[in-house]
Length: 286
Image 1 (cartoon, rainbow, N blue to C red):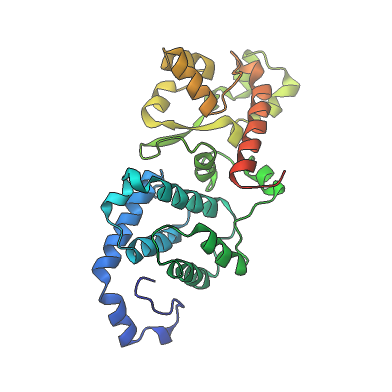
Image 2: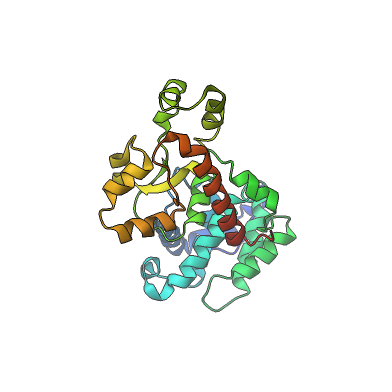
């Protein structure tokens, strides 16, 4: 991609001339790949959470094309451009079918969009226009929002969706997918002991592993939280009330019940708030 040769993976493209074009700028290409991975790390992506490695390629091409240096990864002056990159990458990972088939054509169109804007700045609108011509639009329908709200703990798209929902997190630090109401409390015996009626238990068991009961939590706080109920943990983790209120609002943890019988009501209320956030973040018409 950086060499500017035909991207189609076919024998006729592996000519001596093309190989020379690939080898000549290899120092630039290698540096851009390393820089792209470092940037993705600041977005919170790792080997596990980056579900399509192909996203590294257009990012590396953009960095190489504009001769962007290491300072871009942390520079305050580049913060808005990094946010544009982060949102595009996240949405492309959340949307089904973007990075599976037809990669040669997709990467070629993205390269064309970047080439058409000689000035510095990640051309999100131009890239998405090219993607749409290939049937890989990043627009979302209301039914897709409903599907995203049913994502499970540890699923391929769960981390990107949580990162999209709560963009204020400093994802350069290590974050874990955490159950707000600890999963260890969701056994039939423990639910009965907590006062949950037999006919309501299945409703608890069908919900606890899904997106509305998940949040991104730093590695150390996640270990400290363990099996504590969320209301109890918040009291211990945030001694200053103003900090606790900020955390609650930032993570849609309003009206946390004190015990397990209030879980389903909290789950449904948080699900509604998450639906509103996703609708806005993905530009869906309600």
